Image 1: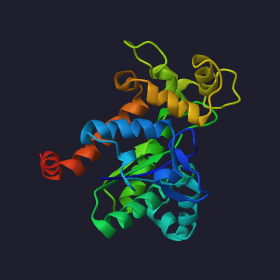
Image 2: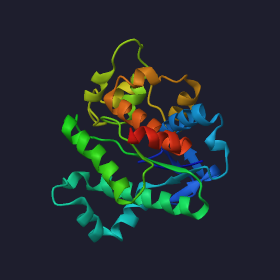
Image 3: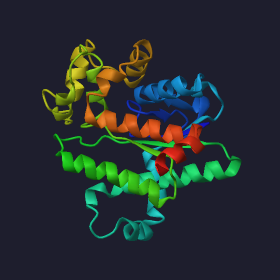
Length: 253
């Protein structure tokens, strides 16, 4: 089993520590979202993917954007005239990650899931239809690559809102956190509220360590529609990978 991931920076999926656009093993520093991905897969596989050589491969956003520039004309034709321009990077990043996943899978026939993390909004609370458009653009990008095992990871407004939900009491919905400002300069932004909840600003490494030390909070997180969408897609694709015959039969029925 292989997990191909891409994020925006060290404080979400993680980053390379070797100044390269693609890395794995000791060259990859997992972020808090990667800790959650590892736990979701460990519950299914009963082992830690991060301990298996080259089982987790990271591709930077810069590397995906560079690959997109080489096929910009074809990308525009595949997107279509009605695709909003602001969702174009979500489409192209998903397409390039899907193509990379296909390349890896075809090289050694290892089952591969690709997870593309992107914040949905960094300035203000995005209307629901814009989040939906970005989510669909990522799915369309994976489809354009001919890759069926792609998973968008698209917090609303950003990963700090997801993390913030795990610091709050359970037993009720945390959907309101999706309306918190994603603008870090806002006095009550998701990042500011998370820092307050954790006793001060946290580095990417500290956030990862904090996630590692906390029990899973899937039930709390799933009260946020953006996390529920990711959670459902993750398990649907995982079923296709681990139980292809049974999953295919379920799709047909």
